[in-house]
Image (cartoon, rainbow, N blue to C red; front, side):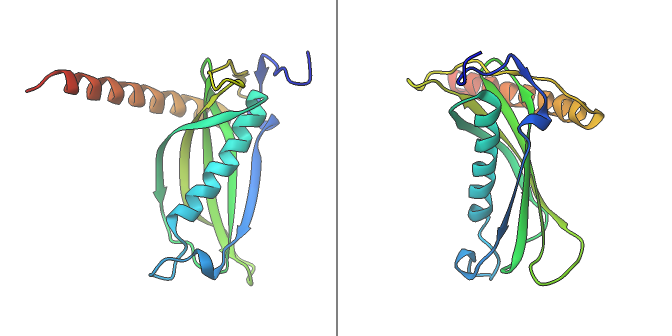
Length: 171
């Protein structure tokens, strides 16, 4: 196998990644909390690294299924992003990202901020989809994540078909 060739399969633990970020005043909105877009940018970045590492090369964001903010992020929070591959198709991958936060100046529990699910497509140098290694779950948690990712995928596909059908029917 060459240095640029990805293996045929990989466990989620091989490319799991964590990133921490200390929030600053210049990242806030008019309400004094951190812009959701700042958090979303970091989510996309960490998920993109996981997708590239898993696929062995470039991968582009195809969609963000959902991102639900549970609590606001404040200036001075240390925000933690943990990402892993949940599911793989032929050229696409779902990356799950869990976001937690704690205060920079206090020892205390991390609070759950949000969870996001992104779909990436591995691409070659011409921007065309290329195959990705199959994900091989190692734990019950990995298997749960894969089952739930398959549910999200079936919903995405059904939604896409329903929208396509509604555009063809002028009623």
